[in-house]
Figure 1 (tube, rainbow, N blue to C red):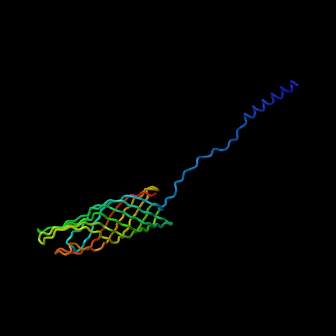
Figure 2: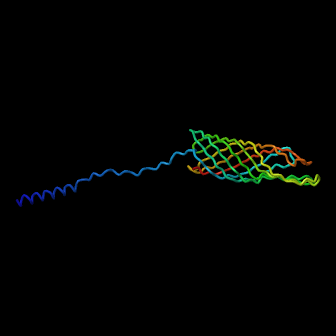
Amino acid sequence: MKRVFVAALMAGVASSAMAADLPTHKAPYAPAPMYSQPAFTWTGFYVGINGGYGFGGIGDSNFGNPSGGLVGGTVGYNYQMGQFVVGGEADLDWADLGAKNTFSNFGYNNYHVNAITTERLRLGYAVDRALFYVSGGYAGVSTHASITDNFNGVYASQDSWRSGGVVGGGIEYAFTNNITAKAEFLWAPLQDVTYWAGTPDAETNHLSVSLARVGVNFKF
């Protein structure tokens, strides 16, 4: 009996040793999943800043044509369908467009555009991350005028809000999925306003404002 037990024990030890020498069969190594950046879309809300240069044309008037810089903020929304993008955009800019006109030795007048706002629809065509667009809608400007006419004895100032339309276009490019930059040109013909009513210097004039702007937007 003892011989049988010893033989069985040695056989077990030998089997364990042989099993230890056999190759293991582990599951293959699974590589880490690769991150794929989501495809870019113009769809979404955005906010931004803009700035540039504006110049106005008053036409046949005793005022000069105002010009100067502007800077402000933008908010908007885009919706992309294939390569077409539709949306709306609104902006409000502080402006410093000014002009001074001197009447020989009799006096002078000043004209300033102090603020500009536009509310526009945009229609664009996307080529990858570049968006080419046209735009149109409403424009309004806040103006301040003053006159010193020593010959006729007219000394006055007048603030006016002038409303009108605006059309234009531009290009916008997405540097990342959230950061875009744009350059655009807008033209806004505005309503007529009468200045110095009831005086010898009374006049009704036209005003149009052209805006060349650049901007940076953050898209949500």
